[in-house]
Image (tube, rainbow, N blue to C red; front, top):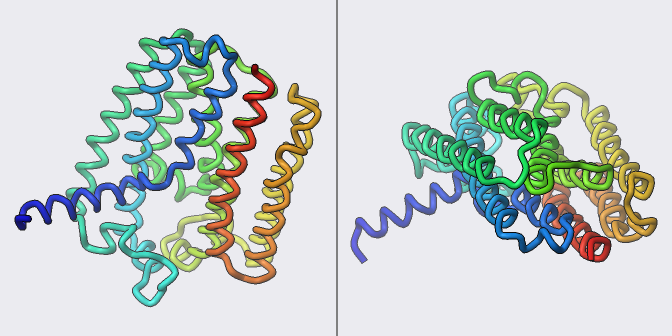
Length: 310
């Protein structure tokens, strides 16, 4: 194996980590969307093509977003603080700039290329979509703009909107492809989109709890950075309670009466997550559990939809 091959493979791995392609959680939204469709639409060529192109565009848009977030976090010093060498629980290699495997120029070029590719793919999805209601087009445009402005440009996450954006991105990535496929929306679909978005939020808030020192040092106003530990704990509990309330409300919003029973694993594990994070003070373990809870929730939604939409 030549030195060039080794270098190319190392750099490819660094870009893979920069794009966070091993974190699939937002991309699972299209699976939920597919199961929300009636059987006749699930294998419709136009719907499948539109959804596939939208998903590919989503991968590129999120890659650009997280690359710019890493670049900003590296430049302001928060990532260097949060991924300090003596913190063995945080893996520095996941941050190529901190690890020294990519340069700032390489990261910025990567963000530009993936950002443009994502825009073109989402425009292509709109062009071939069976339906293009105005609300869906507006949602896609707003999602694209704020994804790239999350930590760059207007730096949305540096003005107190981080938590809302984390959840909002999940909501949009369910509602937008569903709108392109069907042209409509109802209470059951909206409830599932809201539940899906709360998943990333409920592991993101634990990350913010762990990163409070670095975020405060650069003035990034997450709830954890703005409040006391006790205040942040109550915020996390409130978001968890909101998820529970939404699950219990789904039958009223058009879902089956047994929906809360299907989501019982989510409810039980969410209580355990709060206990681990704030009673046992193991924030990173609670964060990892949050990732698993989100995936379990997605699986439960998929099963529910396959039963309901037969």
